[in-house]
Image 1 (cartoon, helix red, strand yellow):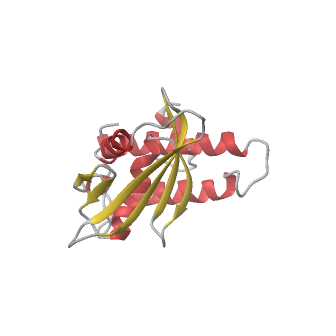
Image 2: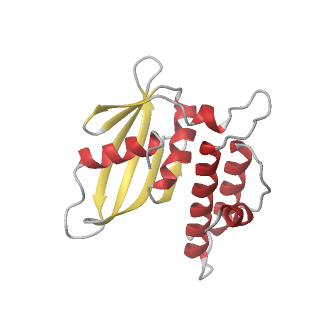
Image 3: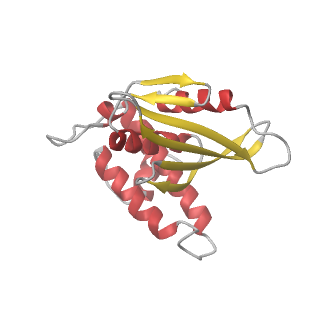
Amino acid sequence: MELHEAWATLEIEPPADETLVRAAYRRLVRSTHPDLNQDTDATRRTIELTRAYAIVRAAQRCHPTAAPSGSQSAAATSSLAVRRIAEDAIGIFAPRDDAFRFVVDEVVSLGEITYLDRGSGLVEILVEFEQHGACQVVLALRDGAGAVTELSVTVESYHPHPPPTIGEVTRIVVDALSGAL
């Protein structure tokens, strides 16, 4: 999918700031997600929207647009400090709400977000690992010490063979949050 196709898929015109792009993506996903829509093409359409969102967000990180006064730009959001703090945990140096929004925006590069719950701080992602097949990665945000939001990482395989180690999955999530993917 080309960048101009991604903008069209999200039904918005460039340039648009991060807030508008995220709002368009969420509005469309709410109407197409297979959990909420029984159409035969719901899964395909949701995957297409998620891919378009990832393409537009990647382009915004490379070439941030000017954001209206008082709002965070794409560059500011993607510059949050992220550190691995344990084998299965990541520290994000931001308040929990900002960290949640940041995580949702950045992990679309890993796979399809299958569940979100801002109140409980849960983000579930369906990730296809090359040697391990499809796995569910669950990210749980909780308030940490000081200004740090802790992100715990778990992984479960959808296949009989084992998932990647939690250390590998945590590293991959850190890379996604750091913009390395």
